[in-house]
Image (tube, helix red, strand yellow):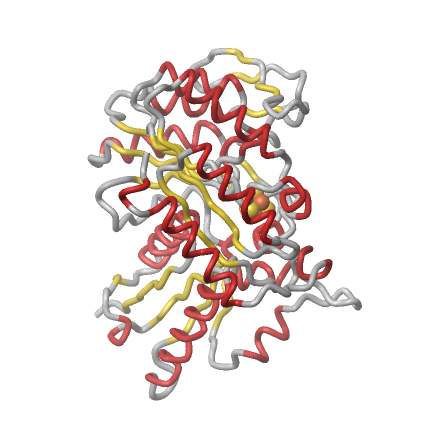
Length: 383
Ligand code: SF4
């Protein structure tokens, strides 16, 4: 009888996509998937450390599995951002924090860096409604509160033709909704092409990379509008979504691509994080409130039916009543369809933890959370 495995996933769409590859990897090793972790020979925990709550839930599950096992069964494998950040972060002597992690969790049999799982392995998908297609991993942005650039390293784009080939396979398997996934999808390709180079698409078409200037600053060359256009035009694609995109990499060309392809999702996720310029600056987000408003206006003009969802980080150090009020004002102005609201918690290894003290009491963060939730997420206040 073949051995069984179980995967528990925490965190974002990228982690979910990674888990689908982890499952395929174990399948190739001869394992069979079980939905009951108590019956598994190997339990794999795909961790997220972006928020304290997700990190604690992963630790809670790890303890539960550890207490349950009698001898060395099931084997416990930990992967994801916890492992990535431990490998990449070094102490003053240049030794990675992985050793410390091993000491902290002696019951873990293996710490698996996610990079060991091939990007191009055919994923074992659980979801039937949308196929997640990873297009890049890592991030170069270093928002001050975020651990991702340390946990996943610099942004690496997956080859264009691989993405198209996986999209075609997913369509063939019956998926008509494809979701392109990455930490910063709209900077896709900046590592594949130089500003002045011509890039040859898999179709043979020669294109110039798009230079993102949407926030008044020339940033990087990207191929994302071409990729999105190609996927949207594959026969059988009824709907294409993409997460997450960043306001400062949202090019005019991307807006045009959305406008001309009605099968690109009219629900756009565009994280704002705060409606106050001082806080945005401390967060190291590359835009001002006015620039964000201008971008939304431009998108709405070109794609009139668009609905916009966002992320807001509540209680970032220095967020006083006035800056919170600025966030409320912005939300009222924009009329977000939905907001994913997170309370700030300092994450070990991040820039904001090193620079700022987390002085806003939990009770106050909760109060602000409730006000924003009431304003944006209650059906009566939806646009
Ligand atoms: S863009 Fe900012 S918030 Fe998003 S993954 Fe990169 S560093 Fe984190």
